[in-house]
Amino acid sequence: MERVDYHRRLREIIAVDQGVDEVEILTPSLSQLRMGQIDRGFLDIGDLLPQVSSDELDQVLTKMASTGQRAIGVISIYYSDVVQTDGKNLYKTVRPPEWWNDLLRRHFSKADFMRSQRESEFVWTNFKVSKTARKKIDRLAVTPSFRREFERLVSRAKLAGRVLKGNCVRREELLSALEGKTVAVVGNARSLDRGSHGRDIDAHDIVIRFNRVPIVSTISHGQRTTWVATGVPISPQRMASLGATHVLWLSRYRRKIPSETAGIDRLYLHPSREIDVLAKRSGVARPTTGLTAIDFLCSSEARKITLFGFDFYQSQSSSSHQTIETAPHQFDKEEVFVRSLVEKDARFEFRQAATS
Image 1: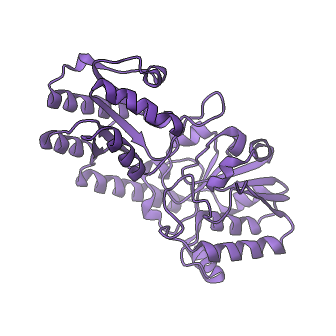
Image 2: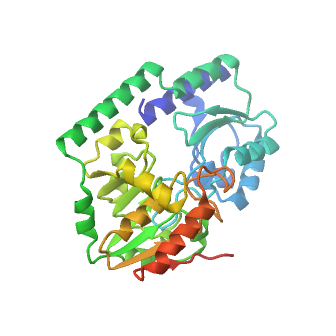
Image 3: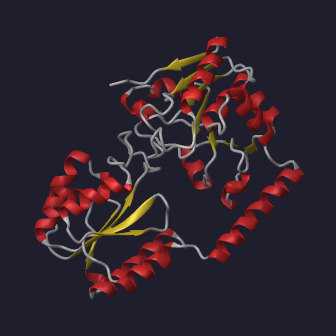
């Protein structure tokens, strides 16, 4: 279901449940929400709350609560794909669901939460939704099992066909592209947010980013992306918005590749056997995409390789809310291995992010 269709159906369900004519539902702008300028009517605030800075949220929600208005919204727990003209990410407050739940319940005693069409977000209301409406919203968010299985089969067939025909990017093509080039490898450490390495990152010939590719601001992260190294799905639309040319799938788990990622023109599939060898060499049972990319770059003839945003989860990740204890990786072992690689290869440089 397309995004617009999903939101239309969501509004219809809520309108019927609350006895509201859909034409009476108001959609405020961000400035109207921040200033509390709409003080009556039923509100659909969409994804506006994450666009408000964390130090303003209490004030905004206090004003909303004081009017007694009913409201529905959607909250993303990850950074937006949209970087605004001022160079900052559209979303100013990016926190895990538990944080948002606590905040909203402090202001609205009847706040309710439901899953959304996207795993990266959830639906919230400041009123209790009926069981009937909740079931409808849940069904709206869930892809039927037969469709999921069909999509998996399509993806596997598409990927198998590409491999059989030799239509994936070959390792030699990547190595040739790297020869003599400067490479920025941009990790997702949150500590990178506090730096100002953007111009330096963008000055490299090739810029490699990872997974969800969170760009918090162009000042800290830069804006250029050449390749996306990933172990999670990425869409052609996201690749186009980044201006990226290649996807490097650096995970053992090819079954996770959806049809839209499998159809991207310049797709490289890193051999699973090489990841297994890396796991043995490093002592890391499940190498991250970052470690796999760095190991791959060691075999290239790149002239200079600079690592940004790598603190081995000391500040956590801008693309995840896992902690160093809950993430499925061994970051202490990865750090030892990566630093040993860097010490032996003068082409590598760690560009440390701010620590305070």
